[in-house]
Image 1 (tube, rainbow, N blue to C red):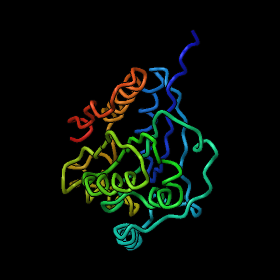
Image 2 (tube, rainbow, N blue to C red):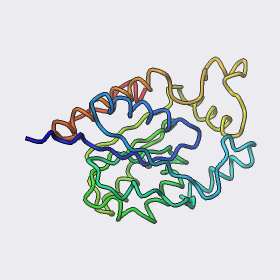
Image 3 (spheres, one colour):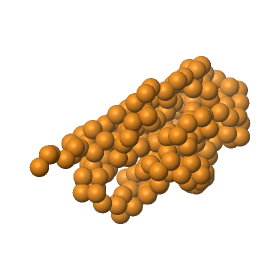
Length: 228
């Protein structure tokens, strides 16, 4: 009897500041530990976006345009995305409560061709406000004919209002964690080491579930580490 082929997972993602990229690298480690074949497809804007943006006025403009779901034109995708996969992981940051501009452009251009009759697991990296992003993305994926059994969200571990102010200042090119008073409440930008380790555990769980042909909906991704 021929040996069963390992599950194949496609990561389609955009990472603005590197936070999504860090989570996915660890998610992929967990998947590969379970023998899953992982293919990475990074979305690349036609005009590269700079992080940090550089100053406060430009950051305010970016926040306003992304609030109204401005699209970011993309370079052509590779032919790898046209193959069949057991699962597609669609990942990116939250921009002003919405999916990022590159993800929205992907949905507009290739959504139905990519996601119809396909199992998709969204992964969201955010400072804290992710529900509007999730509900909007899920609606778009359903409209494309995709199957969305579950989702993963990682929020920055700092408490409010420090993380919102900290993210704003970081995008503007400041170093809020180095400010004497502010730094007491905001030690670092982005996801923690323990969250990256949690992403690796999630990857292993997903790999086991795919190998056993079980339902991804049964996995609890909303842990206290992922969503502190």
